[in-house]
Image 1 (cartoon, one colour):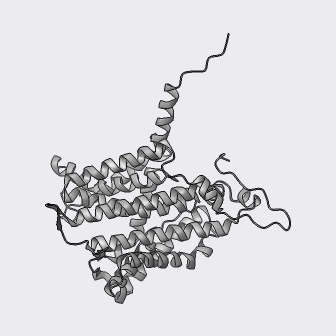
Image 2 (cartoon, rainbow, N blue to C red):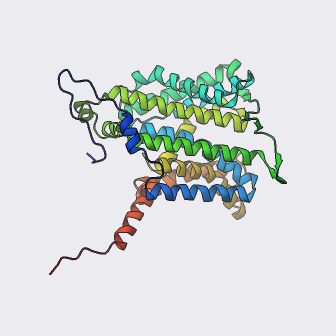
Image 3 (cartoon, helix red, strand yellow):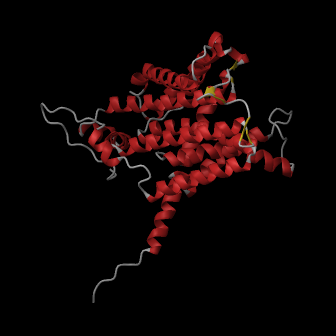
Amino acid sequence: MPESATLPRPPAAGDERPPLLDPRETRRDVRLLGTRETRLAALVVVVVAVGALASANDRILSIANFGLIAAVAAIGLNLAMGSAGIMSLGHAVFVGFGAFTAAVLADHGVPFFLGALAAMVVASLASLTIGPLALRLSGLYLAVGTIGIAYVGEHLFVNLRSLTGGGAGRIVESPTVLGVDMSQSSAVAGRLITSDMKWFVLLVLVTTLVGVMVASLQRLRWGRALGAIRDNETSAAAAGIAVTRARVAAFSLSAALGGLSGALLAGYLRFLNPESFGLEQSIQYLAMIIIGGLGSVSGAVIGALLITALPTLLGEVSTALGLVEEASGTSSNFNTGTLALIAYGLVIVVVMVTAPRGIAGGFRQLGRRLRTRRTPPATTPS
């Protein structure tokens, strides 16, 4: 078992189970930007954000915004699957619960942040209704069970027409954040600030906050306990870890982040299609964390941005080369939509062969090799 997965001693008779979250440990171990890698990642985020804003290209910003929204959901799925080993193919259902909750509350004049918080609670409660039963399974059995969750959720979204709009979808009211209308452009110091710019700033802040929170939790005793459960449930239980409670908590927090992603999607897109929260979208979230790197927050963000931008990149290249039809709605059976699905599989295969731990894991391995080469070999005295 990895050294990072430090286990508590088995509890003796009469001993109380040690808390998974110790306030003293929280103050000691959670250090924001405490390593060279996190400082470099923060610098990259700042450079990319400033560059995207400076470009003032709404198309680029739109792709980045969808990627950041997906990144929040991918971070949540990575917490369940990468940290706790919970194979979930129904994650998009919790995103849908959050999206439609935020949409309904927006129609009743609830502020955006309160609606997002309620979306997280509803998605988390939805996971708690099925988590204790579904998480008794493991491996492929759990994966098949979560596929059932995906189909049941999609059926509910399509048939609860009073809440979701059914097959016709649902229009969402334009959100206002801290008195700023996010759907309208405005002029600040003589510069036009578009809606995509406003959303980009908000989404960068939210994604960064979510990423820092999850990365901090992974470094605590609770995160190490999840890693121990992922590696070997029997050994973790023998060491005194409440396996079922920890798995349910991870699944619930994962669903809550999915609900937050849904609330952000509802506010940004302002239209929700119930069919967008089915198995296909769940598979895309799975592809994001596999390509980016299981258990890595930065990997989830990288994978989400890559998968989100991939259809657009393929469309630009294929249209320029005249390889396929430009839009997926044309009469051709081989179009950019089909090409994107093929590309997902090819990218996953290439990443698994060249970097089994994902893109983020590959970068970490490359950094270790470079540091090893720079370090002079130790000389022994003659």
